Image 1 (cartoon, rainbow, N blue to C red):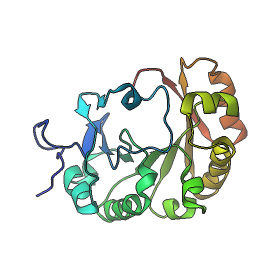
Image 2: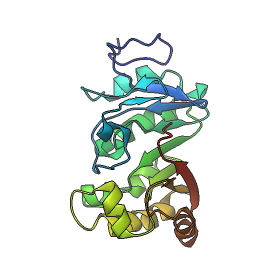
Image 3: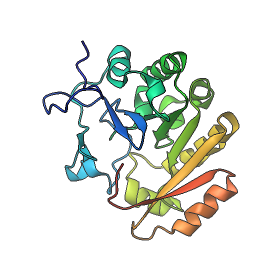
Image 4: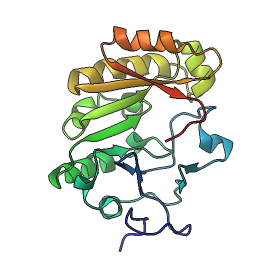
Length: 213
């Protein structure tokens, strides 16, 4: 039996939430770890709950647990790899899970990411993602490097140009790419972020500060 919380079970605070439902989509929570330490992220303000789901993980789920927690992927408009951690930190698990979900009839698979997987892995991972993933939502979060570093607090210099390079790589492999930025962060110009997305020839979505999920 899965140790994670199934979407079809009653909420039990003793169980860790691996899969959760929002807006008709099934969300998969692979890790609580992140590359960045974004100042605006709920978990860095000691808040781990999103839309009533407690998403802090003390043990990262394996592929079998992930699939069991979600149930039938055909029940959702799309399956989204997104918790309160960076899903590409568990790239092999993500790819194996996505492949299995496609085989089980998932209509569409999206990954919400910080866009730093290539930097972390030391290679271009977008062709691997493209085999099983239909869409990427990439956190841009600022219109320039100084603001990005201020709000996202990358562990080392140079994350911003790596993020931009990831966007270029991703758009060549995956047709549906959306950049996001949060309206309400000091200094962040949403119009400028949208224009940057336009220059990359990808979509843009405005998010709102403190509205998660």
